[in-house]
Length: 440
Image (cartoon, rainbow, N blue to C red):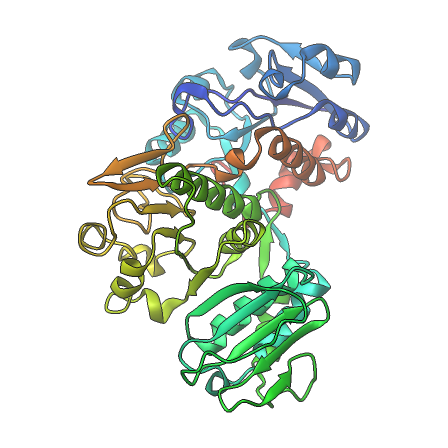
């Protein structure tokens, strides 16, 4: 039988001061582990930060042990944030650690784990085949059918209240991927007259039934029709979306929601509840959470892709924005997207810059002003009148209790899906061989 410890979050590099109070196990998930052969131990006080007392875990069959002795003699230790040096010292040689290890950010952690002969499986590297919703795929199909010549240089996207958010996300992703033009996203009332921008660009109207393009030549095109434009980008992008993996344990959407929420709340607080002119860099999964929150708050935004974030093009977009949300990763980690020079010359004082990607001194953020991501309780910092925030764990800001429950569910779905892992952690390593490992 495998003895598994669910350890309490603590003061470590990603959580200075120990302000992240989440847990990797909630009481209602204990029995799933026991049913699959695990001997479940929790560190005393595991769930107290999110409203669960030790007795609730004990009633479900878990054993409670105190720190630091709880770390010793365990086959598997589960913790959300990576282990601190003092915690690594408590581990027994041969233990398997399952956590957001971030070894690419913390080479010293890697060295200590290797010295202790502890095998690490990085939670952030465990993936499953992506299963996008039908609405998302419908949005991909619609946007992929549009020929960029029909969009023009500055297309508008008008979203009605009834439009499905998954559909909107897929549509925006496909339009950016193939249109290559910046998209300005606005919100429209049902039945309002659709019109073009008057500068040779287009207008895309998104409703509960799909989307309609008013092309640069004034022609109306139903993007739900297979013969919408004759462009075949939908098939190419669909194949990519269905083929790529997604994190089995992670809350990327919530990262985007949390970052956008913090940035918008901060801007409103600084500027007497005024609304900012917003730009979002990138159209990946983190950015999609930002799309959702900005829409819920009725804040218009401009969406930028790789052409607009190139060094020669980005300054003009930064100068016109007051809330800047970066969801784009630096290609190859070789260059910054937003540089210190951008911050000093192109970003107006009073602006708020949110980074959803994160970084450390060893793996930097795409936003150069960050030597580190930011942490609770000082999420943002001010530099020459500009405000920057890049919280390590934006999903935590979204809702600490709700995200703890979701992490518990996702970890359970990986570890307790059958009795195999309780019998042999080597099976676990073999099944998730693509995850970052130490000592395998």
